[in-house]
Amino acid sequence: MPLHEQYALDAYRAAQHGEPAPPAPGTHDWAVYRELRDYRRFRAVLAGHRSHGRLRAALRSRFGG
Image 1 (cartoon, helix red, strand yellow):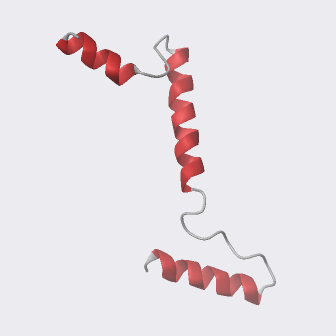
Image 2: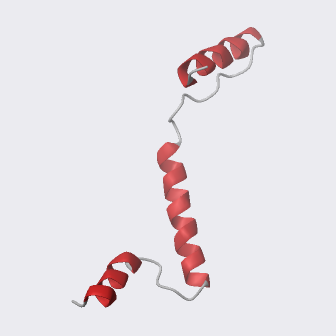
């Protein structure tokens, strides 16, 4: 079942039971990406690595620059 059909079914069931409708698909996508980025930065700091700019620093050390 495609995502939009599942959402329509869930919204219909919620309306039948007098419950609030679920959030639309994709509503919280950017918040999830931000949380993941923050988590990865936090783990890098705990491991003793740089929290940002790691890819550029790795490329600079690999290829000189």
